[in-house]
Image (cartoon, rainbow, N blue to C red; front, side, top):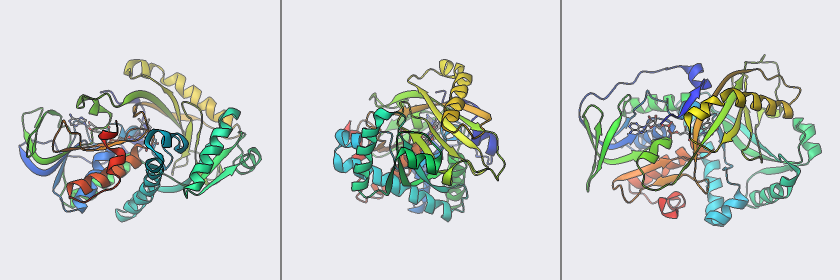
Length: 401
Ligand SMILES: Cc1cc2nc3c(=O)[nH]c(=O)nc-3n(C[C@H](O)[C@H](O)[C@H](O)COP(=O)(O)OP(=O)(O)OC[C@H]3O[C@@H](n4cnc5c(N)ncnc54)[C@H](O)[C@@H]3O)c2cc1C
């Protein structure tokens, strides 16, 4: 599958910081993880910490799936607002999903400290109404979040203008958010896990998978085999090739990042992450090297050729969108890219076993919270593999579909 094109910023910034070998022989392991992006890296991190022998396999050079294209905002706010999610999955599950995402941000912070990773930046999140008609929805959304213990403030147009210099009908300011570079974080996780005994192989496409009664046998392009007690599918959007169910809708999304600004220039208050109620939504963040990243302008199709032809147009639109919000901040786009993006109907990920494929677990962090969902998947799957009960597993299971 063609997952991204253009110039994904993190790939340019970090290049290929590490080399990983190809698999050149047949091997055995307790757990095989198919996919070495952020989902596979987090799953491996949890498994090695639980003392489980595991092995990561990837068809691409590590990180060159969706992970290098991610704009890497960490939000507790799911693409489906809480006030809507409760109608889709029930009140308790909806609130719990939001709480788990908030916890995941905290956990990513602690992991970053443990592995001495420096590109995690704690932030706040500003969710503003793109149109006057969105205000009553935004107020309901604020009330339900406040009632459930999330630290939120409702900002009137005057407060929004005074604090953030944004002219909009209102906004929810949340205490919980962060930014990261998921590509460098993924490498840092892999480097940590390698030291603890994890094996990782890239440029190793798996062409055949046999789910057997007691184990799983993977066969590589070169005919080598991997015999594993369990398999974790951390294959990102390419999972559609393995599932019978039509579970994910693929879109195209766009992002552009500005030139580096002088470090003395202040962009906006507290460098909060910003997004809005438009459909598709517009979002922005800043980076540690003092750039502004703007994303959105999604198209509801998966067609790489058509998607790529729109890059220039989308860049101009995103720059225009940014200027409409912050006319006084200079934004000179430097790198623009596009990526495939998958979403489920309820906006929640798919995590856990899938009965037609025994001895396997799926770690599919679909939607705008892909990274926090990957963390939740790593926690749940590690619990299931080590025989612990995880009361949240059901919320994200295939059974809900
Ligand atoms: C433009 C863009 C912006 C985004 N912004 C955000 C954001 O701000 N916040 C957020 O949380 N999420 C965001 N996301 C989503 C997030 O980036 C993804 O959820 C995440 O990167 C997925 O990681 P992954 O490891 O699951 O998949 P990937 O990074 O795609 O890794 C899966 C790997 O599996 C491998 N694989 C698949 N099939 C096989 C096979 N048969 N054999 C061997 N290997 C195989 C692939 O080669 C691939 O490298 C964004 C995504 C895009 C595209």
